[in-house]
Length: 417
Image 1 (cartoon, one colour):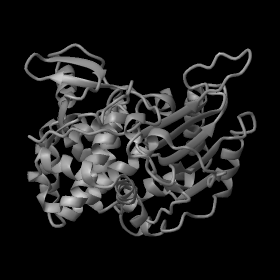
Image 2 (cartoon, helix red, strand yellow):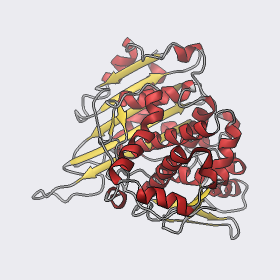
Image 3 (cartoon, helix red, strand yellow):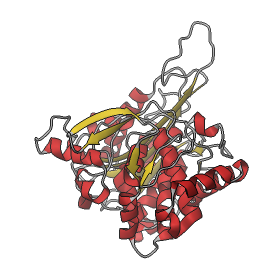
């Protein structure tokens, strides 16, 4: 077991939306999946997942491999009927809303609609999808001929969070397999999890400290290559401490964005430029800033469904990590999606400034108030579609609007053919 002592930084907010198929414990070692299995078996008391969260690992598949996906190398022109229906949703909403929608229902024509899809936003926690793509890219570089070895490394490599987890208010689920008790708490420096669990905490609980840790490990994988699994804490710390700060920042940003660049997503559409907590930014400030657009995130989802985010096996595993198996929030919490399988990442970032007569609250920033939702929806009736929704509505928690839009877009997909 390797232990590392360092630090990083923090950015967007997310929520406790837990991911990965429930039957994945033996494959991943993600302990909260064992907890969910025991709940479903009636051995423990806990919240039962939504009907759409009950798919197994082998039920999840990529939807755009083959000629259909090849036709999406460039996103299509808007479908007239779908575009008209999507346009009709927005007149009463804030002008900041931007969206891209792609209907990929099998047996039906591909249909696309958009609204200000190239508008740039602070992506917040949705940018953690960039890190998970980078993780699988580095694993592929180490073991190009064996996905099983990549999974073994994720499952068997345990690392200590150290100062890279400071500080984040997002709690993580920690299940004690001996006492069969689960506790939601903030991550602490002494936490040790395998790489699968750190990635799960990053995507499912949207923990910023976990995102820092995974990004740290991605850098070390890139630098040490096949030597990474046997890397000692002292070697890792020596590299991270002795590399000039400017050089390490440039390296970190370049490495983390490589996978999405290779997938054809340019920096003006999606980029991650800084870490996720102020404590890490204080010594590793990043470069270039972070930016997201609906079209950039739509291209990300399409690349995953085509099996082109690193490679087909990696794309499928990224989709599994996005699969919502517990509490659904914001866009994904729409009751219209209860029976659907959803693959989801939400992100937000708000800033407040003094304003007479205004008491700034969480997710209601008066300087900026970003809320973003990226989702794949697979309904039981076969309707399957991708959505990238971004907004910056000042002084208003947009979660309710995202939820309402989810219901409306689901109806639009079903009724606009």
